[in-house]
Length: 166
Image (tube, rainbow, N blue to C red; front, top):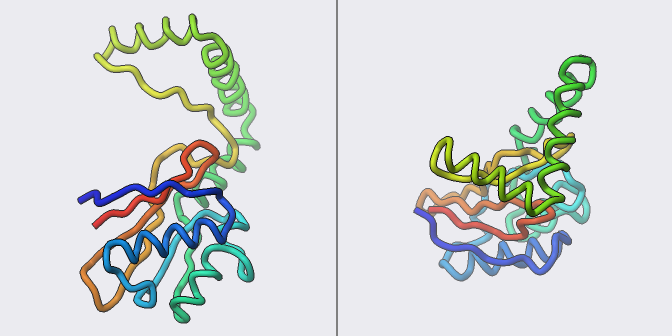
């Protein structure tokens, strides 16, 4: 069950940590009961001294950090694709198509019209990239001694929110 969504002031580790703590407190969850967190490998999330995981360890000393497996898979696939010329050509064409539609409202409207005609809905246009995981996988934070709860978030340049799931 989805419980809430909280905006993050910035993606700085302190701001993300503060948002997570406020979110936990607002629903009566004790941050000291966190057992594990999973984020991408970005320094602001995974840093051992100043990353979100390190800052959360101040509230839960035995907290375990795990790098997001979906993000690791994306990085591995990108590295493998870079060694395969046909895949590199396909990705280059996809990115050129993305640019052609994204930078023209008229072309984007035509694309959305075609999508609606094909399957009744338009889809969000997403650029294929080398580091961004294109799925909206959540990074869970698990708790002990309380209900089986998760708080999760997707942190990218366009979605600076923390999502709480229960």
